Length: 568
Image 1 (cartoon, rainbow, N blue to C red):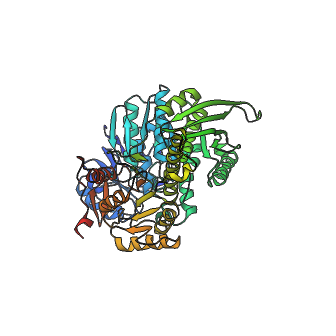
Image 2 (tube, rainbow, N blue to C red; image 1 turned 45 degrees about the vertical axis):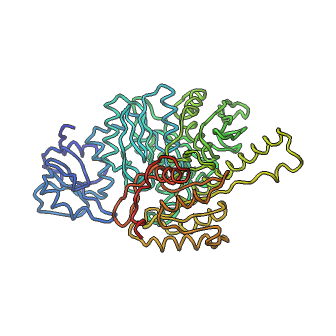
Image 3 (cartoon, rainbow, N blue to C red; image 1 turned 120 degrees about the vertical axis):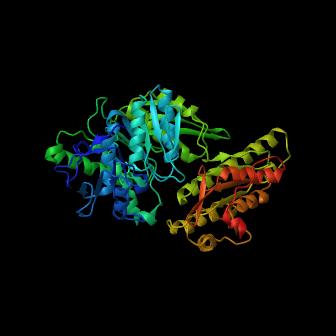
C-alpha cells in the first residue's frame, strides 16, 4: 500500500477525536501490535485483554511510528498523538480508511452464532461460486481469495481489524464482488469487524459459550446482535444493499433478535438524521411452519441427507411456495439448519435461484475436522469433530447415535432379506458410542461440567482428556469434568475415564472400540496446535486418530504428535 495522509484517515472518522489540528504526516501502515511497527506506521494503543497498549507507545516510537492513537490524555510525545474514546473501535475504522474502505465496494455477508458458523460460511461460499459469482471468504480457519488460501491463525477467532481490512482490499484488487465473513462474539466485542459494512447478517444459533469473556449469556448474545444492528449503518452501495437479517426460527435467540431489529428500525425511523435510511428486513429459516424457508421430507442415510426446501414466495398467500429438492454430503440434523441458513441468505438475500443454490449445497464436500471420518481399515467408525461447546457436543453425539441406529437398522434389514429366523433384532449387537474430549483452561469453567454431563447422558463411554489447559492445572480441569459425569450417574473406571494425555486418550478410545462402535474425538477438529502453559505445541486430532488407528490395525501411519503430558 502507498502511504496515506494521516488527515485522510480521519476525514470520514465517525467518532470524536482530539490532536489532529495542524498535523501533517504520512502513514505507511496501521497496527495495534508494537512488534509490527515499522517506520511510518500508525500505532493504535488499545486497552483490554492482558496488556494496555499505551505502555508500548515508547517502543512503537523508537521503532519509527509516524503517529500514535490512544484513549489516555498524553502530551510531550515525539510524534503526533490523537486521542479517541475507544481505541479498538478506532482501529477498525482507521484500518478501513487506510485500505480505501474496501467493504463499500463489496457485497458483505456476515455469519455469526455459537455453532455452525464455519460450515454455514463455507456453504454460502459454495453456493455463490456455483451461481457464477466472484466470491471470497474469511473464516476462522482461513481467508480464500480466488486461488489463494491464507491461514488466519492457530485458534479460531475473527482476525484483527487490520488483517480483515487487508483481506478485503486484496479481494477488491482480485476483482471479487461478494465476501462471506465469519464473525465471532470476540470479534464483535473487540470491534474487529466494525467498518465492514455488512449487507446480510446470518445467525446459526446462540447457546452457552464464552461466558468467561462476556460475563453473562445476555452480554454474549448482545455481542452477536451487533451484526444485525450494523446492517442499518451500512452506507448505500452502487450495487445495492439487501439489508437482510437471516434468523433461526428454531433457536431460542429468535425472539430476542426480532426485538433487536424492531428497536433498531424504530430508532432509525424516528431519528431526524436517519429518516431516509433503509429499514433492515428479516427472513427466518427452520423446520416449523412459521419459518419463511423451511425443510420438509427429511431423509438420512450413510452418505448424507436429503430434504425438500420450501421457500415462501408471498407473505399473504399461504400456498405460494417454491419447493426444491436438496441433497447434501453432510451428516447430522444440525447441518440441515446450516444448509437452510445458507440457502436463505443466497435465495432471499441475493436473489439466487433455489435450483442453483441446491446445486451448490450438493457440491459442498464438507469441512476438515467437522464430523470427519478417519478410515484405516478398522472394524468401527472413527470420527474427528470440532464440537467444543455443550450444545455442539450434544448434537455431535446425537448425530453419532443416529449413525449407530442407521447402521443397526441396515443390518436388521439385511438379515431379514436373508431370511433370518424369528427374533432378528435380538441377534444384532448394538454398537457403542465412545467420546473423547476435554475442556479448555482459562475459559468458561461451567462448560466443563456441562459437557461431561452431556457425554454421560449420550455416550456409552466417555474419555476425559486435555484440551488447551493453558496455565491451569489439567488435573483440576479433569476433576471438574469428572464431577459433571458423576452428577449424571457416570461411574469412573466403567462409563468414564480420565486420561490426561490426549494422544493416549485417543489410543485408549480406539482400543476399547469393538466392531460396529463409533469413536469420536471432539473439541479440536481442524486446529493445528494445543496450548500448555504459554506454549503452543503442534497438534492435529486427525493425525492423532490416524496414528492410533494405524497402531491398532498394524498398517503404516503417522507418528503420534508430542504433547508434554507424555512425559508425566
